[in-house]
Image: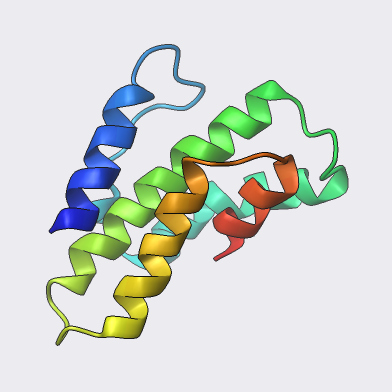
Length: 109
């Protein structure tokens, strides 16, 4: 639940000047979700050192949505400490990004 709260705060902070439309991924299956992130990752990989502000913002926003979906699924699983720890690392990384390649790494996860 703590991870869900952190994600909710980050999503709220990105609501102004969004590059993408806010979607509720918690109600969608994985194959529908990948239709949003896969094209962003493909575009990002073409020039990972200079992706442009719009692509960075879109990738960040969709990644937050996907992490929101992932944290909602965790409550349905028996507490997997490793999964919780790995998700927490990705959320922490989003708040301390220093290079575009770091965002790409989190988005791919």
